[in-house]
Length: 136
Image (cartoon, rainbow, N blue to C red; front, side):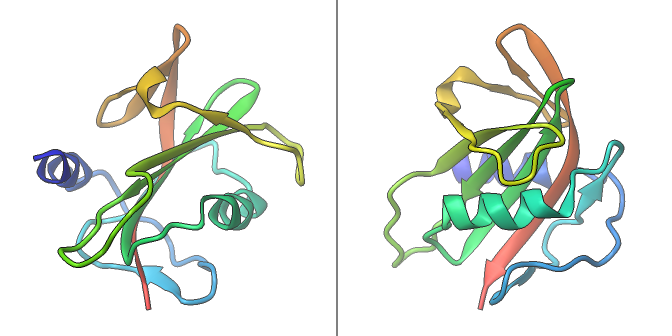
């Protein structure tokens, strides 16, 4: 049921994203349209967060939300029938403008996720990047 709800929320028509580099062995699924808004997250954020999250299933979502001082990065796993998984969601908080900064893990239960934003500690952070991804 959670998978269906998340898929429906991700399927909202939100905009297009120009092609961008993904980590090796990962590509856009084409099932859900990607979304991008301003301020655009830096390129280093995608690669560093992917290495940290190390999504352990074939199909997963990547989302970035922009705060005044931080980027909030959320990975949502969509395991298939025969796949096992450790965590369904992983959330990281990166200081804005600091490449190679040590991120903070955020419990996913601390978030209130909406279609175009996330609420965390009294702040509303707008969605600025969303991708539906597949591992080869």
